[in-house]
Image (cartoon, rainbow, N blue to C red; front, top):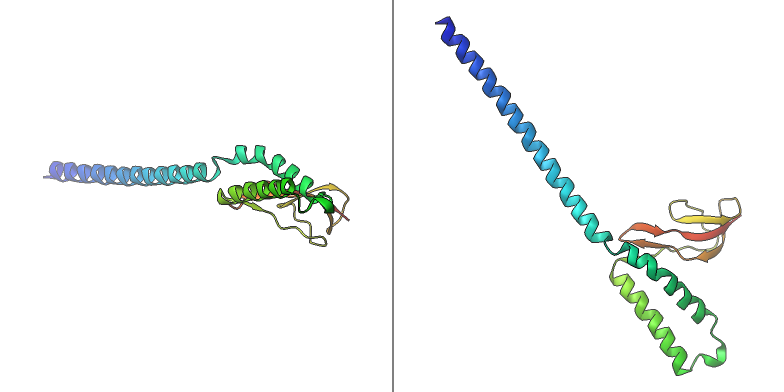
Length: 147
């Protein structure tokens, strides 16, 4: 009788051990699935990051050219076309998750959003280059001067 009880106890112990192992493996599988989903979501959100980073200098150059447009050319059809292309480019990038980081003179310097290229201090006194976020992730910090 003791042998039968010992065998039952041993089997019960083994069943408990295997049940626990199954639960652990199930939890590992769920964690793996969650990690996979997070990576898939991240890949989807940031798949075009490198392409957008390559396009940003083109957008910067469009902005520079339209900011320095002489007054006498404001009503010129060619100049209007250049402005339209710039706006279309901005809209296309915005539709793909890009947003400009809003920076104003006098704002506090934030190392998460800004890259100080000159000066030491806490206040922004010049914006050298716009910064951008892609789906809330900073992909290019704003280049600023501080004092």
